[in-house]
Length: 210
Image (tube, rainbow, N blue to C red; front, side, top):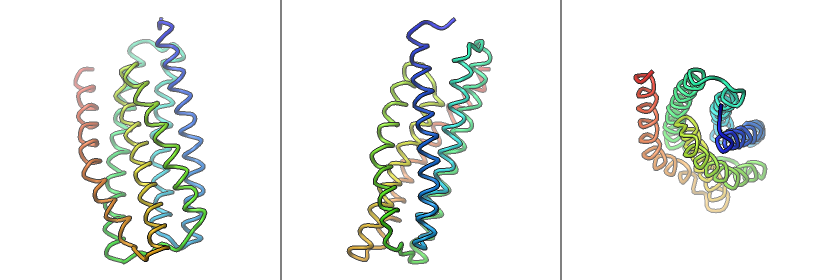
């Protein structure tokens, strides 16, 4: 049986993942609508990226729920391993998304149209996602969940990407600097590749210990 402290942390994790899922649904819907309306491929892609974040949040919600329902040690470990693999794959998809989007943007000279809705949702994500990241990292340390720690990487990546989209939309609208968003994406990729590799290493390590 879980001690009271761990039970509280698990419930806190469930709450933060519920917030993540709800926010990602909003972010995905608003970004795709705004992207299509503005003719912005990258803003639309940001909305599609939110789908990856949604899957990651959903799998973590499942993993935490297994333990919260009183699943035995074997069930919790199995849920953790599966969650770790899903998060690692989600991070890999994020790498692909960032790379393709940045290359396409530079080659096609993609210039997002001014979109107040797009600026609004990306600005909101810049504020919301760091909060979710900090909460997930704190809880992951307490319950020793690499899967939740990996999901925290997804969240901070989303914040960085939202910042890139916000910066790109703003500077392009004011100065015509269409390339800023894509350069920032390449800088993100350097960090993201390392985090993705570490997450796959953790997932493989957990499988080898099973």
